[in-house]
Image (cartoon, rainbow, N blue to C red):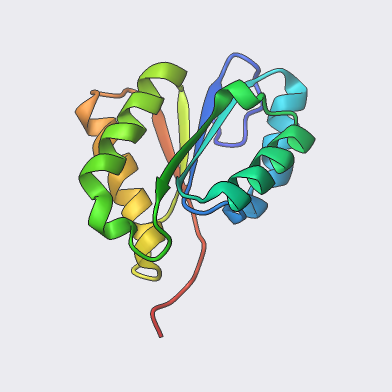
Length: 143
């Protein structure tokens, strides 16, 4: 097993915090979509303008609009919505049935990013998920 495996039998769920965080993985997502792998993506924090931007990016990357989730937690305040986010990420996981989940790392660097990591990690435990979970760094410190 290797993390960067574009085997089209894998189903991927990318769990982002803000629309624009996908820039860290856009090339990989495009490669997966081009290989025929099922790619899903979601965002904890969004608003209508940022959601439209994310939808346009996903179209460019080859990710179906039917495979996108937007949870609308307020920017800078996701930590006040952990229970809701955890439940919504669990629902996304049940719908997408991923074999691999990618989420931003818990880095004690940005409360919204750390909240997404917490919600996703606990959602996996809630649904007894047996998928592989990968973290990617964002590196935004509280300084």
